[in-house]
Image (cartoon, rainbow, N blue to C red; front, side, top):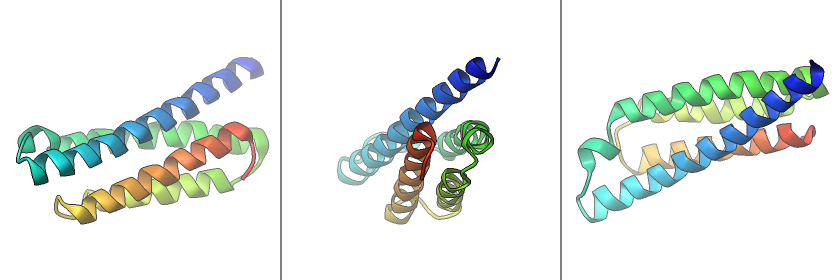
Length: 123
């Protein structure tokens, strides 16, 4: 059973890293396509995309990073991930643009780093 839980946690950490990368790509492409080319504003900048992404990040982060604390006893990955999720949440409160992009990319970078450290059991 312990091996199964470890495998699930590892998959969730990997999913968190992938979701963080996709979020960063979405933010960068959103700024470029909307700001420079004026394309896709309705779809790319939809607030629901950001809310859904944050909700998914919260679920994956809480489960996998929480399991990591239980497994290796290190709270640092959870704290780093929580900081990143907080930045992502703050990004939902600002207008679309550079501020939102910077907050989101900083947040997803911290979350991805937390998942990587969680996979390695150290921080």
